[in-house]
Image 1 (cartoon, rainbow, N blue to C red):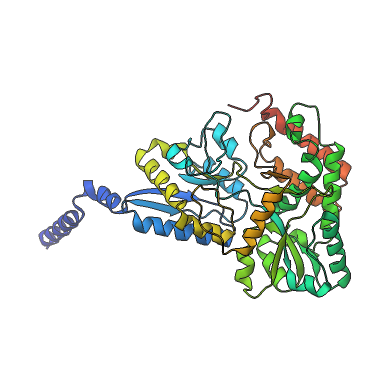
Image 2 (image 1 turned 30 degrees about the horizontal axis):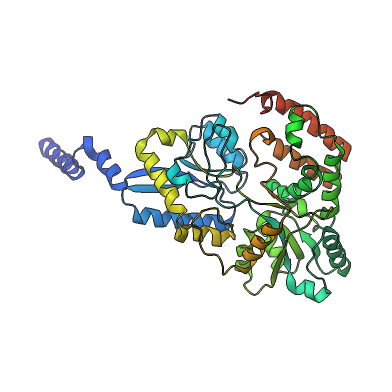
Length: 437
């Protein structure tokens, strides 16, 4: 009986080895079936981004045998912390979406310089001080403006505001009507606070000194400057029109407030156009940029340092590097890039741009960008001597929220910012070269 069982076991094992091509070749056969696989991580907190990335990746995988791009969930929440954690546990992705912290990862040797066959596809990719390009923008910097309930504006007889004072007057009229809040703000997501903060920062600080951050590094200025205090004053004025509970409202609920007549306006990026239309196709939407109190129109636009990058670890593996570059070239082909740009109402950054002429809202944005007095990246997306120290952005937003909630005075806020800056700039200072490789 034992002999019979032994013979049966040998037969089963032999068949198994034959079917796999032998145990030594089993893994090779499996790898050959799947081809070369790379990982992709992006900020998937936005539904439009999630859907468009998935569609483009599926298109690539189905048309490129032997090449596989696998999306790893990006956590949806604090994306910067998520990427930092992936790095700390040795799981840095092959392709990764970079936000304002891209230069930090370049200095750490985590990102590879991108080849001309890819970067030549773009109008004005950001070149760093070493002459290399490490990121390709997903779109022009996410242009901010007010998306509003056009039907309600018409009901109250409010014309589309052309100046800052007209914007505040519109807020006052809506507030006085008492039917809905003038503004909805998603303060439950700290990064959302950056939208309005960047506007008032440009209005009050950058309008007077475009190199203010560099001057903080060299010690000639600090955050007790009157222009910084004016940032909190303007922000407090605008936020006085936000809905109750704004500090706990997540960004994902903004469209619900807007289409259900709970708020008349939201200040956000063009990526929200598609979300509003998806939530209620019949919603009468309008858009306008908010001018600065001095009458100038300062807008977020152009190419910043944010975008898609490839890791140096991926570059070391020639097969993976080939897949990564091939995928990025595929992503930015007009028919594929169109999927992303449509989903997020994004301004294209490629020379051979997709046709977005049917998006009337985006056409308004592009027209406004052409008339703007200045275009610049978000305050936390700058490189060189105006790059922020790691984590200073989030510290500033938390401090701003405390001021807005009455938990801290403006004088206390700027004092805390000075303390945080002093500590941060001791280990990172692009003016002196501290912390810069």
